[in-house]
Amino acid sequence: MKKVLIFGGTHGNEWTGIWLVKKYGEYFKQKYPDLSLEFIIANPEAYKLNKRFKDEDLNRAFQFLNESRPGSFEHQRARELRNQILSEECFVIDLHTTTSAMGKTLILTDYNPLVLWLARQIQTKIADSRIIGSPDPNKKYLASQVVSSLMIEVGPVANGVLDPHALEGTFELVDRLLLSLSTAPELPSGEIEVYVEVEDVKYPLDKEGQISAYIHSGFQGKDFTKIDGSYIPFRHFSGEEVTYKTLGPRYPIFINEAAYYPQHLAYTLCEKRVMTF
Ligand SMILES: [Zn+2]
Image 1 (cartoon, rainbow, N blue to C red):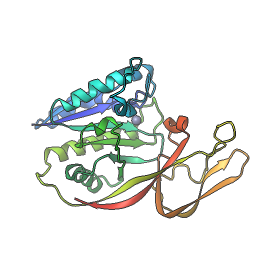
Image 2 (image 1 turned 60 degrees about the horizontal axis):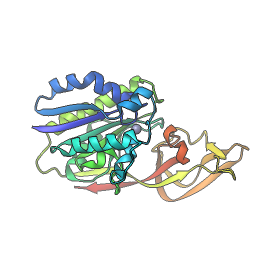
Image 3 (image 1 turned 90 degrees about the vertical axis):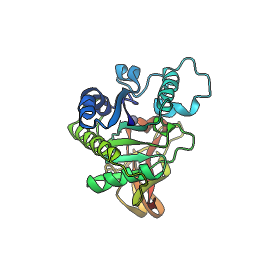
Image 4 (image 1 turned 30 degrees about the vertical axis):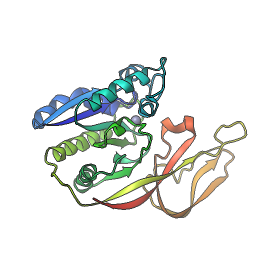
């Protein structure tokens, strides 16, 4: 029997995954009796606080497991979750949402044939879905603990909100993934288009280290819109526009994600690549 672990609430203020885990676990278990499904709230302490995390970001904590961090709830929780994930062969689905207008996306951290085949199923069956490649050499993400894994990222949705589009979009992705997992071929092969992350772009900063510009109104919500050459991502608070240039076609994602302000991260640029498997 194929075991699948579905995690919601890795970030405690992303309610879509939390409520999917709480309310639809039994439904999916009955619908897919050939799969062994477990639905898990990854960060219950952060959920109680309705915050992204309590002491540190759980979805970055897995890279620090060889350190001693006695004061961190997430450090201890990452250790528990890693043990749980590695205890038996399984597939991992980790549910997230974003404040960026990214629609229904899958994020892959490993390009093995099963994961690429599943992504291809989603791309084929769900018209407005997109596939993102986010290599994770330090294995900082929960989903990177095994290669048979992916993240679901749906938006735009505000944190701490149960948005119907995000909930139903995530439900549709989970349902289609479980159906595909229950019918996956032994040796999957094919071809798929992936938006691979290539560059993080930060906000312009002033002398005090504060942001000196905000996302331009013409750039807000333009996730996955092709840029080739000059574009205007920011406007300074003084009114002046900021023009940047790409060397070749790029596709922005995570434009104005709320959780990335502490790192001054404004958006990420991707390249579109075709992968064969
Ligand atoms: Zn998240």
